[in-house]
Image 1 (cartoon, one colour):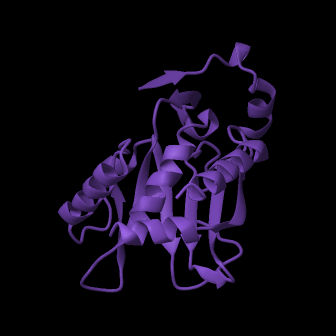
Image 2: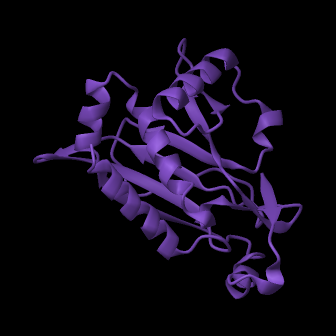
Length: 209
């Protein structure tokens, strides 16, 4: 479900009006997360770390309203729930595909459905009819090396408010296992406060395992 925002009474009106028409309104932040406890839990339960972390990320992100704002027909709108559009490797080569899967509020059910969706898509790079959805989070991973910053390909479109999130290779640091996480958002909808809130929620959640 989605509802349009009444800008006249919206508490973000001034911030929204300031950033909405900028040519480059998106900004990117990269942090490191300690995923050691969660990684051990995932492997002990024979789950995919990629899809398990994706689920944790989406579960926490959906709790923060600002990550669910989008432009729909040029107007600010709020979705009840957002789902991942993720990259996945094509098994018979060194290329990849982009897959959309609905978010499910159960880690095992989500992983099963996401894997099934990827398999059913076969070697097709992208389903452009599905990709027009606005209720998405673009997700990718770069497991070959540690990074401190990323960028994402996109058109110069001030109304493209879909967040882009990616993570990279683990690096052991003593008892910790650090993983870079990159978050790119549209400033008309998401401030540094909200990115920080998501990061803090993820840090707390990852320590619970």
